Image (tube, rainbow, N blue to C red; front, side, top):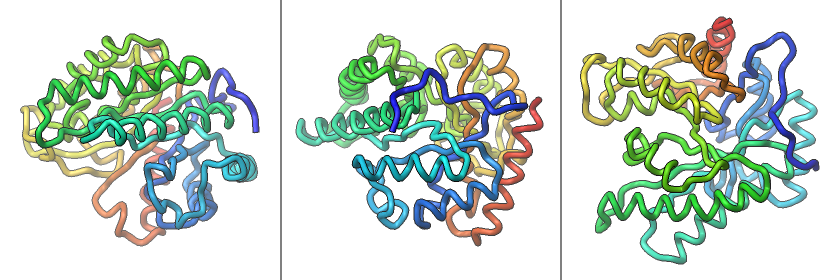
Length: 298
C-alpha cells in the first residue's frame, strides 16, 4: 500500500487515460469485473465502497486493510490504475445519526484513496426528502461536504462532486455548493449525461460543460437522445445510449477539456438501455466501441 501520488499517471501515447465505472459488472466478483474491463481496453477503473454499495461484486470487495491490499494487487496484475474511489453518499437524512454515518462513509473513501495513491474521491450531495425544503437540503449538503472536505485537505485528496439526481444537476445549485463549502479540495465530477437527463437543452448542456471545465477533477462520459433536444424538458425525458450514438458530441467535450487544461481521466459511465440486462458479451462489445470512440478524440 502506498501514500497518495500527485496524479493518476499518464499512459504512454495517449492524451488521457480512459477509465470506467465498475457498476456495469457489479453482479460479478471483483476480479471477474476486472477481467471484463481488460477485454474492453481501458486503462483504469473507479472503485466503489461497499459501505454504500451493499453486496457489490458478490461480497468479494472490502475496504479493510487486507481488502485494499488485494485491490492494489489485482489492479497491478491487470495493468490498471484506480482512478477514483466512489462514495454513494446522501447528506440529506432524517436524523443526525444517519447524517454522521454518511460523513463516516465518505471519510472511509478518502482514507482508501490516500492508501491506494488515488487522488480523487467521487461524492454525491443528496436527494430531496419529504418534509424538507430545497434550501434545507442544500444546507445539509454544504454542511456534509465541509466536514469531509476539511478531512480530504488533510489527506491531500480531491473530492469530485457529481451532478447527480434532482439537486446537484441544477448547475446553479452545484456552483453555489462549491462556493459555500469554499475548499480547494472540492471540485466537480462532470457527468455529461446527467445534465441532459435533468432537462437542460443541448445548447445549455454544452455551455454548462464550458462553465464547469475549470473546476472539473473527474469525468463521467454518458450520452443520450431526446425528441426535443433544443428545448428544456422534464426530468428523465431522454433515452440513454452508447456514447457514439447520443446527441452530445463527446469528442468535442473531451477536446474542450484539454483546451481548458483538464488533467484528470476520461471515465466511462455508459448507462445505455439494457446495460444491466443484456448478455455480458454484448455489453463488452458496446463498451469497446465507447473506448475506441473516446480515443478517436485525438
